[in-house]
Length: 235
Length: 237
Image (tube, rainbow over all chains, first blue to last red; front, side, top):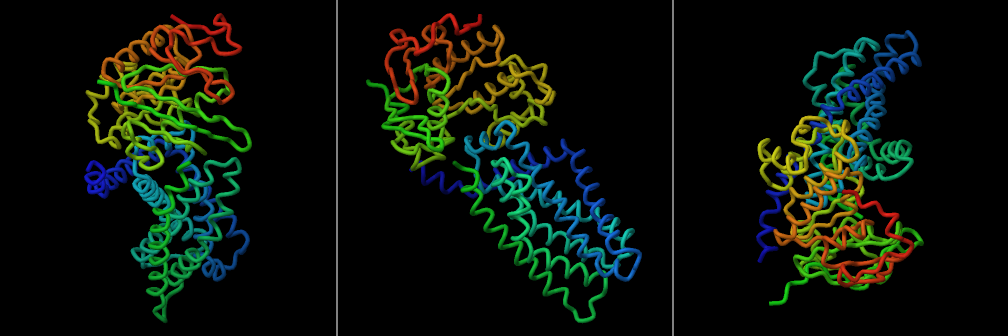
């Protein structure tokens, strides 16, 4: 009887836990805002170094801008994702929430949404850097923000899952990119292609299929992440 | 009327890698009992409490909390159990109050400032509610961790070295909290090296030696753990 009524309350409980986790993670990010600025600086420095590799050829810089924007974002994202679990592990705070008990899916989606917000903000903040360094502007700003939102959704969901997995290991700084990068290659390719079309023009109308593909990857990653997170964080 | 069995462990084994931390541990604790768990460092006290709290799984054996099998219904057990572990389960960048607010939201409890400040007052931290935990001493963190355990209002409370890092007034605070939990009918298992203090406070005792249960009975008749001479265990205030 007790179990039946609890089961009936489960979706509501999960939503409550998701909102509680989201508020907690956003508060932790706000408290660690110096780190957020440092991660942006890292991304911007990566874009600057990539531009040195191309040289002063402005056409080539513009052609490669989208790829380098997403590479910079990907490299910076590993720092942001690892950092998001650093606070959970210091005093085993995540274990404390699991023992309350908090819903593992609520915890996962709360943190993944907070990470998504962080990465999307980072992506948007790196756009002016890209425009300045690569002379790669676009007038379709809303579409560009949309592509960044979809692409970072595809990064944050698996990134949160793997950051949770690697946070319990000693070699987490190395393991996270090793596990994450191969998995997000399709997301990266689709995001680069869609961003390139926005910067260089889209005479063949290819943007929609690429953004649809990005959305599909995001849905798959978010679904699988929610299913697997409990197995990753429980003994 | 006989009291319900709050904690029942049967043949519990747990290993880390190739080393067995717990071997065939079996005991029962009636509801409302205050139990001291003692033994030398590495004897398996913390592992036992973590298995009972469902923080880790037993490799063999069964554990029932208030009649519920921990393997079958982990979340149901977790709603009834609170654990104070070696690690405080606190978020260091957040303030003391924010830590309690976070937990209150997950618990569906009152997360307003007033009631949470009262909770902090119980552990002597009311004037530090707005300070980040990272500015706290180890003893203050322990007090805050105790407050967060009380916040759960659990029927089974597991305390791993609750006197750790505390000053003499902190010792008295823990003594008071244990007596309060007893009055409220909670079942308490407390791992500690403070044998004399535990004997005075608790009605039952468990002694672990190298992962095996060496004694289960009344606290008054409990033998001194092997290697302990009593004098080596500072008992504080």
